[in-house]
Image 1 (spheres, rainbow, N blue to C red):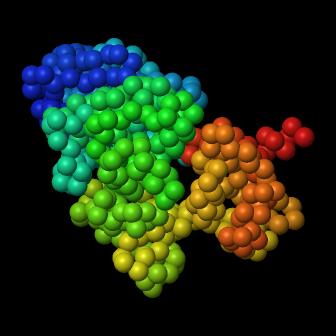
Image 2 (image 1 turned 180 degrees about the vertical axis):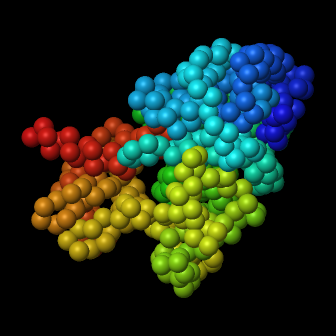
Image 3 (image 1 turned 45 degrees about the vertical axis):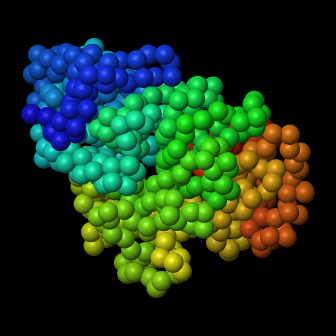
Length: 474
């Protein structure tokens, strides 16, 4: 027993000449990865792994990780990706939910638990349990089905046109759905995959000398562009024809800077782990005028923008809700949360959005991120995008911080461009000429990079943490 994704990955690794490379210098041939997968399958069978049993897999963005993943699937088990450098406390919290007995690291099996986990109906067509990084308490285990993700890969195949002669450079970690589908689609199409074990500007610059397709979250592109300005006149990407991005909002200013990196098309993809990823697409046909929106739904996806359980009028702001046949099977061992996450079959994304005059969808911000400053409701994303238009600002990220007088005040982390000379007073004057006074940040923090989470995405929550740290030092 295996499943649809196992068949896709196994068939992708069979052709002669198939190889997965890494910017670390490691290359694994397809036949060696198939052999590794068989060793993992046998090791699990020898331990009498039950059908659909969750198995932790240590992920370091190594070619061998994909062989190990295949072995787990061929054993009829469910893979639970865990970053190789995850904190011990994170692993404990994940195992408390997964109840896994075994961890696979390469072709090595480690015993991490003694009790056979219960037979959960939710895992019977499952390929993966991907744990989201919750801000408090235990993370949520998103159960992804073999068939649903395989069908989503077929949609992405038609949308993105990855070809056998492509070389796809991916710094996206295989613990996240973005990194997983990019790698699976690349191999499915017979293209060459280059994994980046750890995102560094130097590793990316090396990989870009031969890449035709680059995948990454906007924060990665922002860092790469900053490195290009500081270190060399331009990072060499002579063969790059396409850039795939998603996971966070692509600001118009960043999109325009990306377009200057190489004469490549940009595919901006919006989606959540829970909805199967890539629910909206802004492709070349919608650019450049469409920058600032997430485009239109991909095949099979329906959406509504709703408030209080009902769709709002065209152009009005509400919560973006998505209905898709490719979404999660549910949250592991949490049926109440699964049920509460849907409204009339639509998944509640928590993102505020509106439709534009031409029918595209524009994000306004996260409902939970809205800042309440002195009675005014402010979407920090709006301020992020405005700051990104400043000619001396490379990146900006705003958040609300608790304040006794105003309820919340606005803090902004600013990353200046190379050679820029910025000060808070001049920046306030620049903003006052372009927006209302109550939207101007109260405090500016000038840093070399935006705070980022484990996935490499800019982390708005960390802005508030930075503000607290600075306050405690005074």
